[in-house]
Every structure is written in C-alpha cells, then in structure tokens.
Amino acid sequence: MKRYIILSMILLCSLTSVWAQSKKQDNMGKPHGETDFVINWKQYYTYNEWVKIMFDLQKKYPSLCTVESIGKSRMGRDQYVMTITAKNTGKDTDKPGVWVDGAIHGNEVNGITCSLYLAWYLLTRYDYDPRVFESLNRSTVYILPGFNVDGNESYVSFPNTENNPREPFRPVDDDNDGLYDEDLTEDVDGDGELSVMYAEDAGGDYRLSKDKLRFVRITEGDWWEGTRFRRIGNEGYDNDGDGSLAEDDLGGIDPNRNFPWDFTKRDGKTYPLSEPETRNVFTFQASKKNILVAFNYHNVGRLIMYAMPPESKRPAPQRRPQTVAGAVKDKYAFADPRRVDAEYQHDADVINKTVSSGLYILKTYEPEIGNEYGEHLYSSYYLLGAYSYLIELWGSPTPFADTNGDGNISDEEFKKWAELDLGGNVWVVPHKVKHPQLGEIWIGGTPKKHIGRTPPGRYIEQEADKQAMYVMYCIEQLPKVNFGNYDVKKIADNLYEVEVEVINDRVYPTASDRSVLLKRYTPDKIKASISSGSIVNPLKQETASDAPVNALYRSQYKKEATAAGEDVEFRIKGNSTQVFRYTVLTTNTNAVLDLSLNSANGGKDTIRIKLSDKL
Image (cartoon, rainbow, N blue to C red):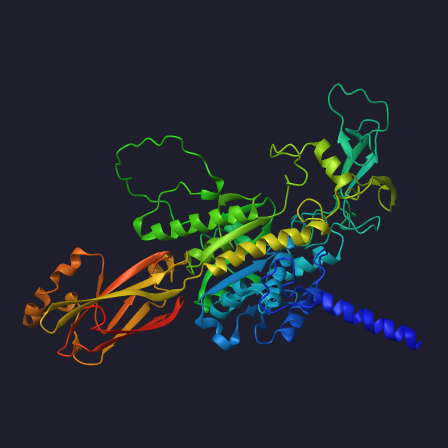
C-alpha cells in the first residue's frame, strides 16, 4: 500500500509539472490559463449548468468578474450579465465597453456557448496573455450568455426541432380557436428528438431513400413498386380535437422584432419592449453610456451583419471618372457600397474596417447589411450610438461538407460528411410507432436537432474560439488616446505658440458619429495651465480690445490645428491625430505648460512642456 501511495504521489507531481503554466506566457505551444478553469466546450449546457459556470468563474476570478441579474424572464428565470474588467484599474463605467449577448432566439443556443466561451477566454488568460491583460485593464466587457432564457432552456433540455422554440414563452393563440398553446409538438416515440410523421399509403407521394434514412418525394415518371408514404406532419398529438396536429405550439413574439428602432406591429405584434427579456436588456444597455461596441450572436448562415448609417439622400458629388488598371477584389478589404452623409462618414469607415478584419479572422463568413424592423442591432446603433454587429453562426453550406467549394452542399456531399465526419449519427432513422390517435405510423427521416442550426458537439469549440478572436480584435481597437509630439515657436516678444498632438491609433473613435448626433457622449477634454504668464483665449473668443495680440497668430488657421485655451472639448476619431495650438503670453522663457487629457472612452494622459525646450 505504501508503495502505491508513493507511486501515486510521483504521478501527481509529474502531471502538475506538465500542466504548470507560466505567467505572461509567450510560448504558443504552452497553455495560457486554460487549465486553471477547465470546461468541456464540446456540449450544450442547460440553464442551471451555464449559470453555475458563470458564478464559478466569478468565484475563481473575483478581481475581474461580477455577475448580476438584470431582470427576470416571463417564466421567472434571471437574465445574468457578467461584467468583466480589471477592477483595480477603475470602475467598469469609466472604461470603454463592449456588449455581447447570445441566443435572443430560443433555438440558437450556440450563441450561449460563444458568449460564455469569450468570458472564459478573457478570465483564464488575463494573467498569461499580454493582449488580454492590457485589454481588461483599460476596457470592460458585458456578457449576457443567454438572452431568451426560457426558450434556450426548453431547446437544450427537451425534445425539439432545430427551429423551435424560437420566441419567449408568451401565450399566443396561433390557430385562432380561443385557446392558447394547447396543441404542442410532442415526442410521440420518446427518442428525445422531434421529427416528422408519415403513414403508409398506396397513393402517397413519398418513399424511403435507398439508404433508408430519409423520406424522399417520388418524382414524376419515377417507377416505384415499393411502399409509399403520405406525410402527416410534425410529430405530436391532436390535443384540442380539431383534426390538426401541433398547430398551437409554445412561443410568442419574436424578441428580435421587439426593440424600439423602426418598430412595426406587423413584425413586433404588440408594442416596443413589450417582452420583459428585451426590456431588461435595453434598459441595462441604455444605463451604460460607455458601451461603444455591441455583438449579438444568432444563427444560421455564417454572416457578419452590421448596422450601417443611413444612405445619403443628397445628390452624389460629380467626380471625374477614373480608370483603375489591374484592380483585384479582396474579400478582406470589404467596403459597403452605400454612400452616407458627411456627418456619418467616420462611422461608415469604422464599420468597413472592422468588418474587413472580421472576415479575415472568421475566413468562411460573408458580410451583409442588417435589417431594421425592431431589431436589437439597429436599436443599439441608432438609439444608443454603439457600433453593432449581428453574427449569424454555423449553418449550411458548411466549410466541412462543401468539398468542391461551390458554396452549396449536394446530397452526396452531405451524406459523405455525415458518414465520415460524424460517424453517420445524423438522422432520426425512420421507424414504426403506434400512435394512440393515428394507429401505426412512421416517424423520422429528418436530421437530428444539433446538425443544421446548431453545430454538433465536435465543432462547438472551433466556432467559439474564432468568434472570441473577432471580439478580442474589436476590444483591442477601442480608443486609446494619448499626447504625441509637440513643438514650441516664439512668434513675438513674450508670445509663444505651442502645438501638441493628440493621437488615437485604434480603429474606434472615442464616440461614434451617431452618439455625437444623439448628444449621448462625454466630450474628450484637455485642461491647460501655465506656470508663469497666461494662455491667450482662442481666436473664436477674440474681442476688439485684444485684436493686436490675435493678429499675431491669425495665420494658424492656414494649418490643420485647433486653437485651444485653458479648456477645450472635442471628439477624436479612430486612427487619427489631432493637433491643438496654444498661444502663451509670458516673460519667463522657462515657463512650463501643463496639459491634462481626460477621455471617458480613450483614457487619460498628461504632458509637461517647457517653453525653452524646442526654441
């Protein structure tokens, strides 16, 4: 026994050394915090399971993570949001923020996985990855893994088709018989999947496929002497005795048509934010003016959809035609073709840049302009000023099945993918069942639930990791503002001109064009003071009495510089440098100009300039 104990201890020590992780890991072949909190990313979790993961992460990383309920669903489940930032570097609201949510539609649960994976990625890598370390020190990420918590729970925990349940559980009379949700899709055969029912019928339009995995329509001229089948409908019972099956299922209003911007009763049914789930989310987002970027995870189709500024209604400027020889189309240099007005041009540039980078990161995704009609995407941009992206995950044609690269999946390609990649475990195999109302029927012939709209387990982590890389890129591109070079000139006796650069080398500005138009932003500010003498007011404040002084630096407007006084407010764009010019009146050549920069979304910086430095 003693020998076995010693051997066990040796084995444990050896495993510990294998799993040991170095802080600020720079070896691409070593772990970067993953083994500090191990999660199986090859499965879907129930509501209770993924909520437990959220709170376990908070317990493990209390200095980085807070979990709070932003309200309850119609059925009483909490919608939990994770606030992730380095708490020792400031409050969450004092840093630029990114919002991420998943699964606004109940059946789109891979959005939960992608959102939760991002939280895990950021928290586990903070001590090991310099990129994550810097990002969480200067920014905040708000993550709502599951949006439609009631629909999400039903989809994961109970038999369902790949398309249902989609909406939150608001009682609706779908068949107009005065009853609500009384005739549901139900698992007649108890196999954990919902499929389609068929009956043997000599005049039926269907037969079994050669591999006996599907029901296929008998085409005109198809000679067939085998068993024919008639399609009955979705699996279920006639609970209300009206002769129809599963026609009044659970569900209500599409939550992604329930937001205020461009709301219509045709799509949203009742009124904006009528559902507690959408109301909780919009209220929370509106309370966080620091949210500059928003991501919504949906499926299906592998698209980066985005909110674009409105197309210009003004006449296009006349330009001299140009010929570009040898132009090469580059998917990763995407540019939306719509023309926008000048006040929205920077927003359009930012969207084009970030979508291009996203296409490069995700590789198999395509860009697409988003729809409006009460969508979350457009309310985040047009009402809250956040750059907004809707990611359509997974879906056919997948890069795994499309072997010839034509963008489509033939039956043969799908069959080969199902057999070789998934071991054939794809179909609800057609089988006979005794139905209490219909007698002997057949059920099956459809793909299982986690095939079409949500990926099988083996693909979940691949998708989530790619999405984390895209969000990580956008986090890194949040504004970072600092002073750059400066120059001092003596322009007259006791009169000095100081020019100072303010630089934002990241893609995102400190506030979107839309935020500026909404007046929903805090201007960037510079405060200036001089140790001896005075700072002359900028030209816009000139009066007749000080005209002789102003006359000496009127020429400043020939250059791209902003005349500044003791206080200046502005908004700096992405990937830009802005120059501020200070005119100082002093008799002391050793006077010092102190500048203090405070940007709500871009950070803080200071600089001390001695007037004699560059004379």
